[in-house]
Amino acid sequence: MKRRDKLRFLSWQERRVLLYTYLLLNTIRLALWLLPFGTLRQQLKAIPSIWVEHETVRPVAVNFIVWAVAIAGRYAPGRAKCLARALTTQLLLNRYGYRHELHIGVAKDDSQMLEAHAWIEYQGQVIVGGLSNLNRFKPLSAAGTGK
Image (cartoon, rainbow, N blue to C red; front, side):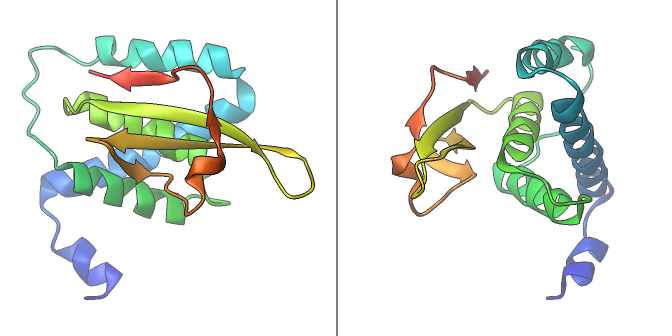
């Protein structure tokens, strides 16, 4: 099935989540560029308190969230990096009540330059930011867990 055909068959709720994901991802990308990471993390922690507690939230499957972040990242101007994707996924998983872990790790590449990577684990599986050599990244202190 072609990508546009899949989009055509999405429910109105799924389309809304996909649009929200795209806007959220690009807002986080801009914030990562403008704000120090610590400030951004504090702002992102405040978002769940903005969402109305009594609002009825229909469940969205984890695999749909992962798919929506992948699609939004693919069509984001300049492509979204792992940290923006991981933070977006974290917010969405929190929104829909899924327990998960955000990891940020560092490693040295072949030329001894430091590189970083962010990923999300859900039920012991990497769902966003998976790499074939992920185990080479040394996780920093716990970046955060959801719910």
